[in-house]
Length: 45
Image (cartoon, rainbow, N blue to C red):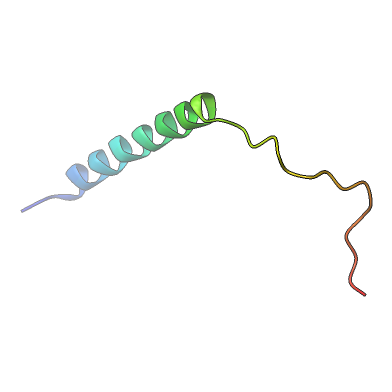
């Protein structure tokens, strides 16, 4: 049976991996440069 300490350890390992993965994805992915830039505020009609 899995005790509470083991569950906490698994959660911490998964959290550390997700933080590392997010930084690597942000570092190595290509940025979309084709998006149009609008100079006015968005408002509802």
